Length: 245
Image (cartoon, rainbow, N blue to C red; front, side, top):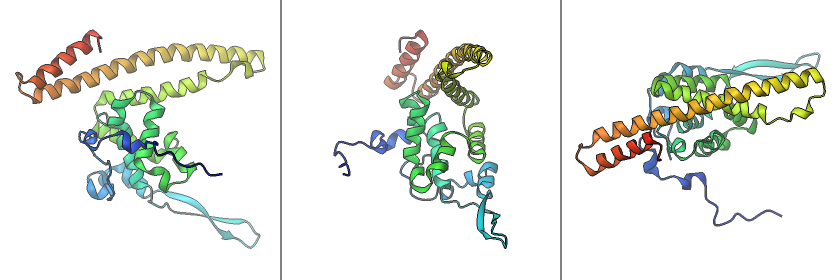
């Protein structure tokens, strides 16, 4: 029997207000038109041009011996807009997705829902994007981070991804390794990963504080120094530096 959707179900879109996305470099929230038409400069990125020109291998019938005939054809671009939206929602440091949580998997989940990628792409395709296994999408992410975001923000995103991968390895059962030699190697590897993870976690925390404190400082300078807004922002910045917030 099909479950009836609860009237209290809240979609990811309902979690955010349109004005929360106003500070993004490329605000694609609720955009139904072509992203490249709305932001033509993005169409000139090398990574986007490469994505548009990429080819995939498909089977076109069989030859005389009954073997499948494989050919390279230009890949469809039906997911182009959703890919760009996903990247912008997930990797723009002023995106509300970044401000709501520091859990990477949750950020990806929300960005995926907001982008609409699942509505236009296969499950396999979606997973290749979320798991960072598509080289073309990675190129778009890298170019976006280099061109459009603070240098240290790109470092932070890389640290977060690395920490997530380390944690996946650390959570695997060591007892599943049968050979004693492999067991020792696995234990040593996990010990090394734990040590590295601890350092990465500290670096992530420091970068978050540095980047978002810098944002507060810049915002405060846009107001009059005597305005209530400036005083409030400066007070919040001082509290963050003291570790009270």
